[in-house]
Image: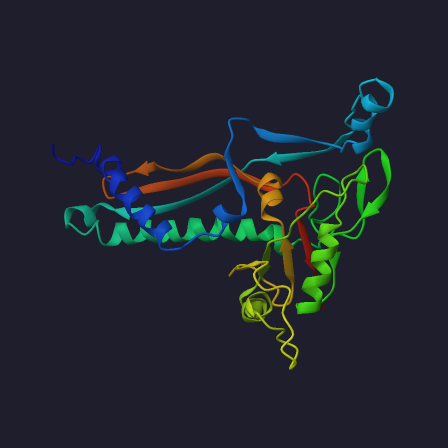
Amino acid sequence: MPMRSSNWAELLLPTIYNFYDIGRQLRPELRPQIYNIQTSSRADERNVGYGGIAPDAWDNYEASGVKGRVDFDKGYTATYEHQEYVVTFEVERKLLDDDQYGIVAGERARKLGVSATQKMEIDAASVFNNAFSSSYTGADGKPLCSTTHPRNPNKSGNLVNAGTSALTKAAVSETRQAMMSTEDDAGNILGMMPNALMVPPELEDTALEIVNSLQDPTSANNAINPQAGRFTVIPWHYLNDSNNWFMMDTVWMNLSLKWYNRTPLEITVADQTATEAVYEAYMRYSYGWDDWRWVYGHNVS
């Protein structure tokens, strides 16, 4: 079938999608390893948190013959509002006529794939880049990493998952102990087992020395290094502070750190003339966290 002026732009879409996918593959993503990625069919997603159960409720039956009744305090509601992201690009008809669309139009679509990946990686990393910012808060009204997380909407007291220590073996040990003492709103130890360090590229070598050296890298006495083998080091290009670092329990992270794809990227013909076509790329998503207890961050000055 000849490519007439009435359909040539539509017929180029499979080629554009193909080169877009190639562009996406050129830029490896950390986002799928960090976020629990889900689809959404709603205008927004809302996840309601619930409090912990006192363990002694299990003892009631043996002690008195009365079955323990558990109650759940309602926690904070995390709301994910999907945002729209749109760009346009042009392809000239002469590229098709001169059999150059696979080179020029394909290169533009490939660049679009690279750019879309960069955009989503930057957004995904923004949760960590703004982890200490009072203008970037979660459901409890606090930053991801804070010294004043409220226990519960109805309970007094604060919980902590933020520090200011530079990345050292001693700081890793202290932060690990702090995370392993993390409580739920009822004061129960959650049993966190931190197993990952997220760092900017500038701290990757330091982190690897801390977690991979069998002997203490700070001692000349052949002392063992207790941190050896406990952590996976996750460097991320898009972390914008060369000193800040984060310890994480990736099991709890997968339960709490969410990314919702409302509309995966679509490419459509927005306008067309006899000489050129304007393509529109559209995607819609949201991201954030239900709960903060999976991470402990250090805002290092």
